Length: 262
Image 1 (cartoon, one colour):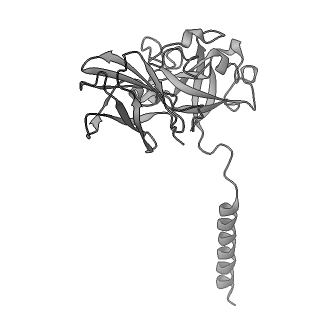
Image 2 (cartoon, rainbow, N blue to C red; image 1 turned 90 degrees about the vertical axis):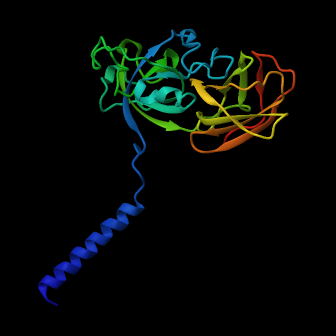
Image 3 (cartoon, rainbow, N blue to C red; image 1 turned 60 degrees about the vertical axis):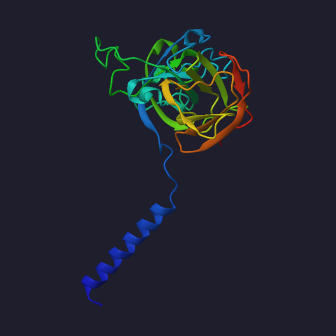
């Protein structure tokens, strides 16, 4: 066998072994993780996180508790990210070891918006300025991964499925010809892509529009009628909640279903 041909065969065999090894090797532990920074707000009991730009109101009674975060512009997506869940860990490679709790992760739900502050530089106070990815976390959640005196830490994060107890909840506010429906306690994707409403007096689905955060509105006259909702989450899963709102309902009421996204 000619030396050149033998060398070519050896190189081909080595290349093949590398391909096989790469295919059989497990994915690195950081697969799917992205980098950001995190601060905290709301106090030790997270009481200051109530309300917020997603419209969930009392986060305790809504089931979100103290594991929540306000997202920067780059992550908030004009409210389309409301309800999404993220796993967050202190980034040991970039953090001051004094302020990082290694080996710990915390899962938070997006419930608020962290507005930009253009009067401050993005690397010194304007933490939520575009295009920065930033989490302003409820203090109890932040302290799971960081040391209080640090104030701000570099983190790694990735979006994960939301785990919720019970079914999806619909709260109806507004008035005649303006129905504002808050969709809460959404599992899986956590966030909503589109929503329609139907009444007991109609066979047609009426498209609803995102008003703000997790609130969707319709301009049709729906007052007192039995209502059904068709909801599609941001991962493309669609559920129909048939006759979830009974006749004679009043504005301000919440209706809990037995259906949940998976």
